[in-house]
Length: 169
Image 1 (tube, helix red, strand yellow):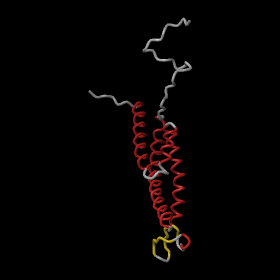
Image 2 (cartoon, one colour):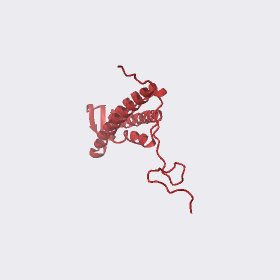
Image 3 (cartoon, helix red, strand yellow):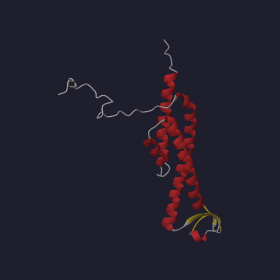
Image 4 (spheres, helix red, strand yellow):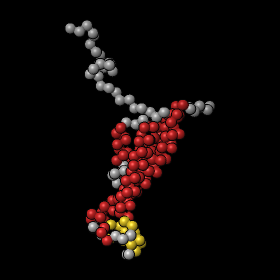
């Protein structure tokens, strides 16, 4: 028999008890990082737009290459831009350029994603969602808009707590 009184329905379990659910604590960005976060947001916005645009170009290139069996050629014998089979390209293969540039811009995008994520102190799921923006067509534009707004609101809330505005009478 236990000598403890029965728990009342309104009492919450103690955090240290073994069966008690742990409350997730959302970390907030540091107010001292506000300037760094604003700079990280600028980099993130640019990289997400550039990566998203190259991803859309990559999708067009994939359709032309695997759907029609041709690559995009620049400055070849058929004019400034032409669609030719890969083995007949004598100019610049724009399809390969798109592949390479998207790959490198995605690396920069992941860096900007990680930089923003670490400064904002978000959970890992947000990092993954933002990273998916570089590989799912149109997602980078949607995710950038959402997380840019969220980060701006969180930074404003943190800096407002440090510098409360006094009400005028």
